[in-house]
Image 1 (spheres, rainbow, N blue to C red):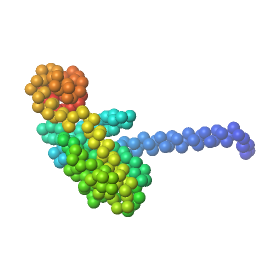
Image 2 (cartoon, rainbow, N blue to C red; image 1 turned 90 degrees about the vertical axis):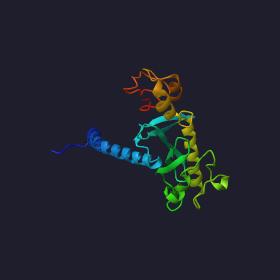
Image 3 (tube, one colour; image 1 turned 45 degrees about the vertical axis):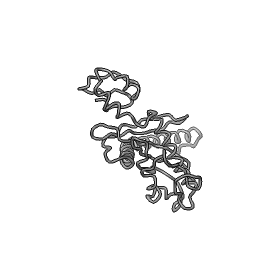
Image 4 (cartoon, one colour; image 1 turned 30 degrees about the vertical axis):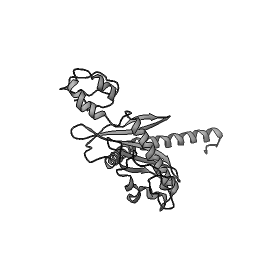
Length: 240
């Protein structure tokens, strides 16, 4: 005997279909989340190494800093001796086709070491050239203290992409923002290694010295020097 169609039956069928579909989607998400996260992490680490000096062999976990009302993420990098050698900052700027996400690497003096576009939606053949070496090479060794991060048309020192002034302006503005983020990180030109691998090393007697506290932030419980004097919040793995 045929089942008579009714609003109730249709509702139950739709709920069952939705339940099955959502269960399948949840299962697929659970299976793919880990490899997707791993791939994203590997891509980010590769980008960090690309924008920092070769001697950066240890990359710290990602941190965040607030500039104005916005949070920005960054990674500090260390050499084989534990000295700070640079900082990779993530910034987003609005281009012609939408947001342009850029990773900017700085040396300890605040000079731009290299830049890397992580994502963009600029016009192919025009603004999308911001990802090419022919444009980004001019920022290698760019010292914001000596040059202006603005296109030459606006009185700066940046060569704009032909017929893509909006993208070029956005890219320059993004790097200028990264400079401000860098300045905010510690409010000094990366004095972390000077304090934590130098002066503090000789003074560590169970707690961070006053100098280390000033340079590195709030000191937590610290072990003896010969163990791991590394709890200065602003410079872990350095105070040894």
